[in-house]
Image (cartoon, rainbow, N blue to C red; front, side):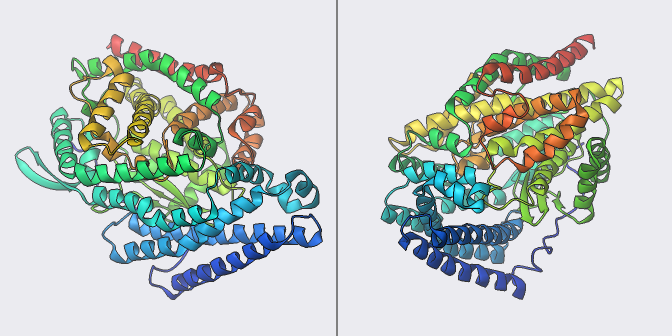
Length: 599
């Protein structure tokens, strides 16, 4: 039986922001943004003309500019989220696509002013400014980041040209990938019936209990990617070529160095985490081989990795999953539990897979203390965990409500903190309530996700490193992308998977490669292991932890990751911390393997 959840499933309601894309309210908001951008430029002109002496006039100008920049960012973010809410759920919505394009063009002048804003902030005498301005003190870390960013700016003329080209050189390629992949329809023969389904539904069949269904879906998916590989490869080449060129011209040693800066971590931290992860690969291969034994296959094919194992388990319709999440969020705090209930009551979730809808799951801030969650729900516990994970992001946004937009700039490394924590609450609750026959299935589901965030994330990291190395010299063919992806999967999964049945087109599947942000991968591993470390601290001292936890989430844009970790006694620059988190995972692997051997 298919694991795809039956309709109807909830669709999100975006009207808290605006009634519709063509409503007078939304049109008025866009006109207001246009006017604010013009005013922002005038404020910037005034600031740049003032001599940098910290008299009362200069401090007033600084304070006014920071406050105005925060307000404008908030308006733009809400408008972009509102438009994105339509595009990501229906890439054939012509009005939404038109609004998205209009917004991209309207924000070109804003991007140019932002570059000037960064350069100006980076030129200020920070110690003296901190003494004179409470606004500066409130934004000390963003100012410190701006000083470094300012050192990596091209000339004003070059930065202006980069902003003019961004809609075609960066976001244009990203839109091409999103639009192509969300509209792919795949022909699949199941039990003698030829069916045509969107790619998101085909990929959901990887969770089906029937191996023949999984195999057929995998083979149909690979054929479909093959048919679309040329434009998708062009998008990858366009994105990576642009990022590499701009990174070099801005004085970064590599796109990775820039990604580490944006993630608020250093190379020492990354190396320590990656070393600990590599040390754990044999343990993950032990898990994968135990799963193969459980499924009764000699070696797992790629399409077996998400297969349900240990029995069918219970069917989780959306209502059951939502109730379970709310109940166990309350076990942590009334604030978290009531927040989850509110998200369901106010229709923040879009859970239904449908043609034109983006695959996967994400959470976006919309306005005030409200977020919206996109997912493609299946009647398996994995979707319940995804729901908890994305609501964790939404809770993080709640904790950031009173912060300004500059203070809210949370790097990906810390953006996963609340999501992993909330996912762990739900996972452990399910294990505690499960019957002995259900426990093996739940353990496997947990390890399945953890394996993705350590082993598969490492494969994606290695792939992207190689892509940047080659892209500096020339375009990369679709076939080369596939060869690099298979190589990276062999390097990480090793003998845990059948090397003849890997996924050569995972480079086309993952949208993270197609954003202007490079290495949209290792922060997920950081978030997982950091979140597990926090959960361990919570279990040791629940009362003391809760007070610090919300404050940590509220502060993720106010310091680097290492400084924030020190609040909980962690040193993230050494492998020892990461090994301790991986030991928690090794314990789960040991439990799973013992249950498999016993059966």
